[in-house]
Image 1: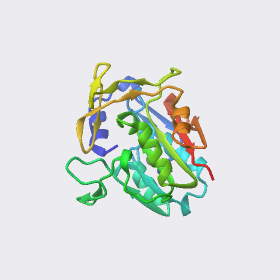
Image 2 (image 1 turned 45 degrees about the horizontal axis):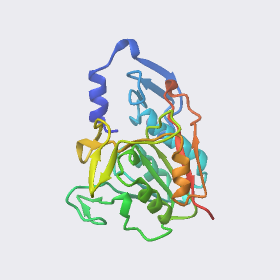
Image 3 (image 1 turned 90 degrees about the vertical axis):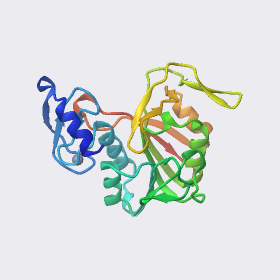
Length: 244
Ligand SMILES: [Zn+2]
């Protein structure tokens, strides 16, 4: 989350929803938590700007990887509080974005271009892969999960967030018909720093996400509730472990 987004939130501040609490930020260690609006993006760390989603992911990363200081990490974004956190705490950090008009594995303005369906990294390159609000946009998420599994070392972990829905089955919002992707449900978009406000949501994940990860090769997959309260906006984090 950038500061401009935080500023936009400040402009739309509703005093009735404002709140301040003593709670440690898992991203930067600040002891305060701010609520600008009653939403997971409205709950922010006043120091680093991390949202409730980012703080949830960082909390579970800290709990799952006590050895983060010696880990090689791949994060599927190139900016923001989570990247700053990983840069500070991991031994080695690789970041990327999906950039239009850039070859996979090439960089533009220092930002590496990767498509998670076809990563250019060698097998067993990382101890930890992370992503936040990425996989609901990936057309072939099974291919993406298989790629993350491939680039993880044995025993490595994939920790990520996606919007999780309280349904047994994932609902695909698009489908491939005669080589063309067609919409099965009214299109829904999320904003992306590099690609604008036009990134289509491909699916609404249900509880079967853990089965989808196991089908892609992961030995174990579960959904972890973060320890933080975050004004009731703690976001479950998906944890998938590559077999040893
Ligand atoms: Zn913080």
